[in-house]
Length: 163
Image 1 (cartoon, one colour):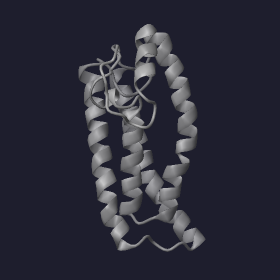
Image 2 (image 1 turned 90 degrees about the horizontal axis):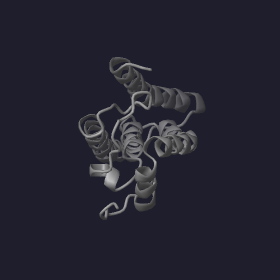
Image 3 (image 1 turned 30 degrees about the vertical axis):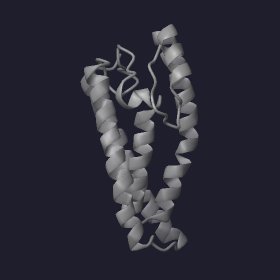
Image 4 (image 1 turned 60 degrees about the vertical axis):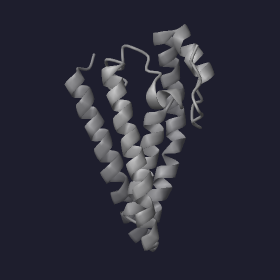
């Protein structure tokens, strides 16, 4: 079993890969493909999804620690099913927040290839989420099944009282 400090370190590595690696690879691909930078307005537009995504990540992580008594790393998951805050709107607020924030970073660096990379990352995420949902169902049983019935996977909707 992974320790909490190792789980957080792994999360930091993921952040570096996503928020430094994707823009760097995108800028390199732009240069290789001869793609021009996105217009200056795109840089400004990138601030909104970056800030919203960063706030969503922070809020979700805080709930995983305070309410769930765990970490966002699946190797040291929350001990309690978290269904409040952004988790009441969507079952995947961390992934959606990362998608927003990383799209914001891609726009901030004005890289069309980085934007494409962010969108392409949605493909493997689908498989990861399905695996994670099986794990959550095994861990939390009926509580997770009720949560899954009441809260959408991707498209957030106004929460109603979870049964």
